[in-house]
Amino acid sequence: MAKISDVFSAQVPRYTSYPTAPHFSDAVGPAEYGQWLAELPPDEPLSLYLHIPFCDTLCWFCGCHTAVVNQYAPVRDYCALLVTEIARVAGTLTKRHAVRHIHFGGGSPTMLDPVDIRFLGETLHAHFDILPDAEIAIEADPRGLTKIVVEAFASIGVNRASIGVQDCNPEVQRAINRIQTDRETMQAIVMLRSAGVRSINIDLLYGLPHQTPQSWKETLDFALTLNPDRLAVFGYAHVPSFKKHQSLIPADKLPDIDARYRMAEFARETLCNHGYVAIGLDHFAKPTDSLAQAKLTGLLRRNFQGYTTDNAETLIGLGASAIGSLPQGYVQNAAAVPAYRKLLADGKLPVARGIELSRNDRLHRDAIQSLMCDLKVDLDAVAHSHGTDRREFRDALRNLEPLAQRGIVSIRDGIVALAPGWHTAVRLAAAAFDQYLPAGNTRHSLSV
Ligand SMILES: C[S@@+](CC[C@H](N)C(=O)[O-])C[C@H]1O[C@@H](n2cnc3c(N)ncnc32)[C@H](O)[C@@H]1O
Ligand code: SF4
Image (cartoon, helix red, strand yellow):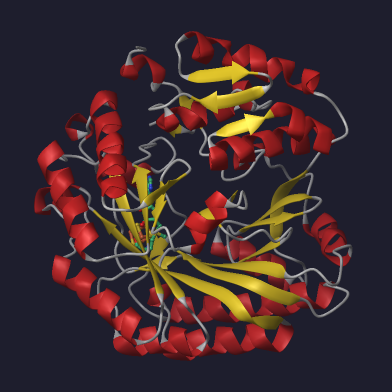
């Protein structure tokens, strides 16, 4: 058996996109994005992602693009910018498009006040045909969540919520600057369900300071009492060189690679024993949930929000730092609000960087997507769908050799599959297909 600490010491991306964001450049800007939007097939439904980069307090582990605000004024100003961007994007499209998925992410969209929530909802309806069965999701911070905010989101059609819980242990919570009582979490879920938000996801984090096998078990037990439809169990990505505030976390109290691996395995075992279906790397869903159904039918996808049933060809990113995925490539808006504001004030689409997909990118992206979603990839099927054959994957097969020798992946008849018990190594297997990796892998986190 391969040694866990050796296998997982590699630092690799999470592959929510391929090529990954560090490889975006200013070769793609507002002009290219404008052209790509105008070229979109008019009858294809779109997905929308709206980024709300504000929070009440800063969790020291946070890797998201967000800032703490003590007053509401900057949030209100930002909503006005979002509305400008929505109108500009819609005005660049050749036709009014249907929308099947909307995701409000952050940061904490639950920072918005009811007036702005309704304003954003009305703006989206004014510019797009939101389909009656559209999935509309929010990322919710349960701390201080109020009924009027929940009801405002429900009134604009929100039917899914993803709630940050992370860890329930008081010592862990103090070390990450996120004090959240079980009661607050429970109340938030009751409010959301009472308002008609039918699907609840819970986010948990392992690899946090002071976590022990016992405290982790208690966190999982508590999460199960909430009866969520889905859970996301993320490994804490500790990259203080990139996210400065993470250096406030005591590095000597972080669990080592072996302990992280055991926590990931324990979560998987516990949740599966309680009837959840494991989805890809880090998601779990009730068997009746659409994510579990998508896994069964091969329709599971991975995008910037993680695993999803969203199979739209085009995801429009709205807001500072938001990333969009179009048939032609990826675009990312200016990350800092002042730069985002300036581009909008100059009459431009607020894109700062991106990447146009080459044929080779698309081929390897499909292989990575299949591995990340299904934990296996049929190289012949992927190659044939691109009009080529599996010899194009010779670099990847060479990179996979060490994993195959250690029994972590099997390679048979052109099918690469994670060996039983090694699903946690899927990012490493995906990295073998990453043609860009040697140039820029220093900002990624441990692969478990
Ligand atoms: C935008 S937050 C969720 C909504 C809300 N802001 C909250 O925290 O309750 C998205 C999720 O990303 C995860 N996350 C944040 N920083 C992370 C990190 N450094 N490593 C891994 N996951 C992280 C957390 O589980 C968090 O719940
Ligand atoms: S984890 Fe959520 S609440 Fe905490 S700082 Fe990050 S985005 Fe904000």
